[in-house]
Image (cartoon, rainbow, N blue to C red; front, side, top):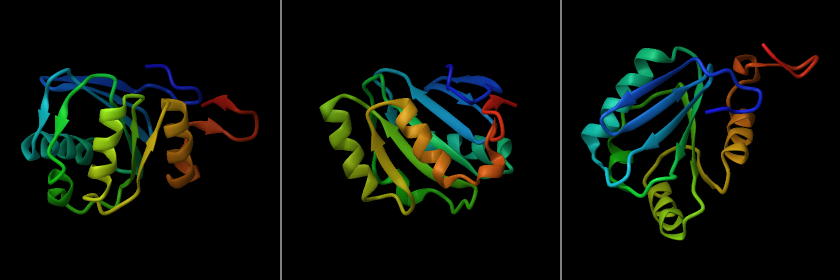
Length: 141
């Protein structure tokens, strides 16, 4: 997945979807028809803790239709490295679900129509020193 100003480090494929890893950003793409339970969310969360030692943001790219138990947000362990969750969807039902989920999450959580808008928001809340962009000339580091 090509994100302006970000360098893709790796892509991990799981039974439930894919994770696109950047230096201070994770983009998750869940497969069609999956039901995200606490076990699925905790496995993703463990993966984040193993792979990120600096603050990062998470983009939930909802191009596929799937369900998520909003209670999972209350069950997540405390993590000071996860600075925010940005949900990307242009589907009305998915957007409504995201608003419900937001009420269960104790942290920064916003909904966006595009990945670029989501990444721009996360770049504002994840410390600048972790960004992949060289501010002096706007080239990718």
